[in-house]
Image (cartoon, rainbow, N blue to C red):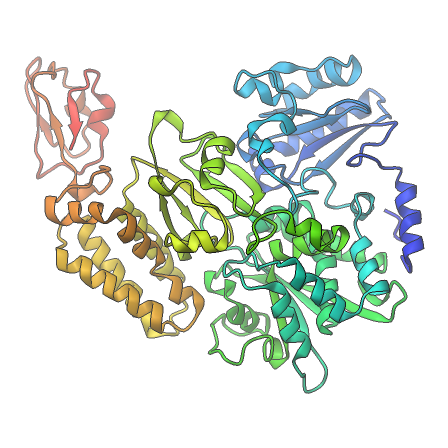
Length: 626
């Protein structure tokens, strides 16, 4: 890094970019690049020893024309550790599921002798001839705008970020645009907040710009407190491309008249925190943060604030309360944060993904942005694809892409020949989209019409073995645990909802309980203090809307169609199939199975704890779960 260089103008920015000698996604014309995925998913899968082995091997062999570089997540989390090899003039090669022992062969065969080690490539995972991630079905249907640099650059190098066009957007804004011009650009682009509600970003910036501060002080904040179960979109952006968020916040600060920003990030994201700190330090050394940025007289600084893992701090007023040093609790609105937010000053809060769109819009223009997505929901959306799906990972698609495309084409559909049942979108605040609505376009309005929401981007796939009543109960349990307890509808109402769901899953519910559950949902929606409380009933309401028959089966037939709710399950031995081998009896932890050798056995239902151990040990398929 060239820490002594302070960028003061567009001309100096062009100079450093020329000094980089980078072309075509940072592939130097004279060097081979080995990119190793070192995001949280890669590190957890064992990428650190792989990275070290590549460094050691290239150094030991004196391969000075080879660079080994850490990157963020490329999206295919299920295949980590991943390394991608760029040889000048050739298509990149993606190696997956690596370990340190495989590195030497890649160096010997591919780097030294230019022969791809096909058995280690991504195509080997599905017996195809594909050797590059770009050619997979997983990537073909995506459009990477927010994730454009993730898996491509070293997130701890500002030089590499500048080499792919970084720092140009704030330079353009500060030297050629007024704050009003910036806001109009974001308004015209139609960018809607990616944190869940989908509120127009430009409007929020306009409100804060127009607001009067008693001392002229305003603030801009970033919500990186990603708390939804199964969501990791923001984490991946911060780990793979932190500079894009930093410069977008500087642009936002300029637009509304703020000179101080705060990034509120989960302390459970240590890699993201580390890379943000490095990126902020580098930006200050280059003069991209601090005093007189680009010689324009505009000052802007950033600080991190670490969250303690409270889901409620994802709500904007609770987040600001936490930054101020208080317990994270929502405030009554109005006044809204744009008028009276952090430290009672006009404040803008957007999430990580929203900011990651800003620089792209500035660099590429409104028309280019509006060509992506739909008229009412331009741009792309990043989803964390998980659950009962073959290709788990991070997916970015244009708004309006059908759910079917994400599930079938990108996700590779449900494994083990199981039937797709539903997709849960929007986390605890969202809902479930059933199979008969699988062609629903993934945009704010379309998903809302079917009883769910886009949310921050969690997308959990469920198959025929999932009980939808149990799913609703799971999310209610999470909401109860994470409720701040400030308002009665959320604190008490969600507990009463959970109790009714628990009663139903134990076979003790009634049809009247279903009616009570629905009535409670509507009361909480209307009376909870904050958006999180108001959306808490969504998982219950959406499952009642699309899977009411499962609720009725639990209370009328006393059966769980998916065989999940233990109190409604019976394990029964078929005497015609049982050979009397005694394996089930010997391994039953409750001693609930009796019978003589070579004679049919019987399960005592009063003793059975519904663990399923007997089925696991039966070699003759004589035990049924009913």
